[in-house]
Image 1 (cartoon, rainbow, N blue to C red):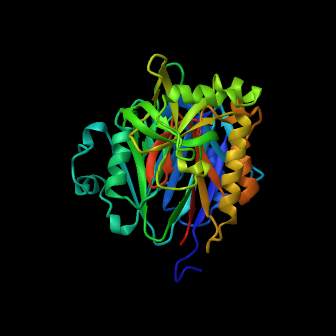
Image 2 (image 1 turned 90 degrees about the vertical axis):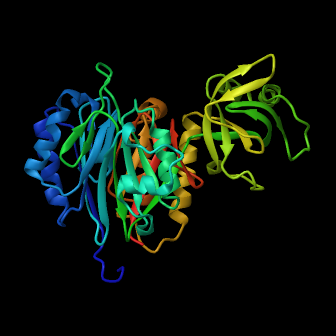
Image 3 (image 1 turned 135 degrees about the vertical axis):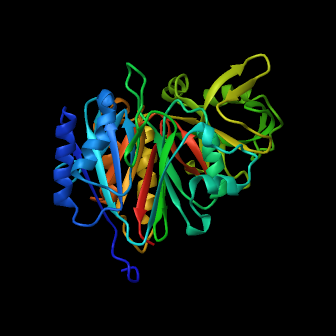
Length: 411
């Protein structure tokens, strides 16, 4: 027991009923059986199949279950707990996932922001602190959900990292339906179609993270010696004292050393990892931020990547496929379970790319099932995103093809 604090309590319910009223009623009824505390926070994730009914969700919910703080969004699929207490990933069909959490001693602050609200990036940290109304010394942890068409999400993550460098931030971009391209964001009693909603949890709460980018490295970690913005012009291999070479030439030589299967995979699933700590002597897979290769200049031998790169950074080429993705998550979950913590997880959130799931693995409930295999019956909920928010090193990024887990426990 943590001093005089009561233990945290989390519970989730999932419904796949096609009627919104039926789905809301079913989840609330399940939660009344599973949750006997006083909820401090509600988290709701709703399938994009219900797009036309998004405005009705909050009135229906609050009529049956008034909550002091409620945030959530739409998803390309939703994740929740099935009747046998196993997590279920529902893709491409109607579903509603509702989580309740009792968080003793924790301050819960919800917010909605638009691009116009954001300070410019030259503003001091106080501008971001005033905007969110959360004190850094209270050690907040952030859960964030944004509309996928927001052009300012990277500015927001950079600003919150600046103002709250020790805070964990996890979340994702809301899902849209394929017809009218609308997403849904929910904050307390209000439905929004744009911006960002989130919640800050401050006080005796820890949010552990697992960021599974689903890639495996090929070749050594090279050092960037010449770069302009997102264009890498020259790299060297510090382990062999290699001279500066055009990265495309290095990559072509590297591919020739691969197996036939990996050479074929490199034609469609080749990525580049940017090390977040260029001073490390040895690297693990989680040390690299995975970014796409946008194009090459055959004449100059340069490559363009989906992020800014600067001379001195270490980069490593990566491949991604279903087997690699599974292996990566398995390794990260096993490592997390082996780390001894004084308190067990109370609940968890999963933010998975719409490019994962059954389409990647040819198997339902793969990522969530692996989570249960290692961590047991921890209540898990979340959604399939158009971009996932999570840290690599000490910096928060927007990812693709990733599963981000936020695991909540008491100190």
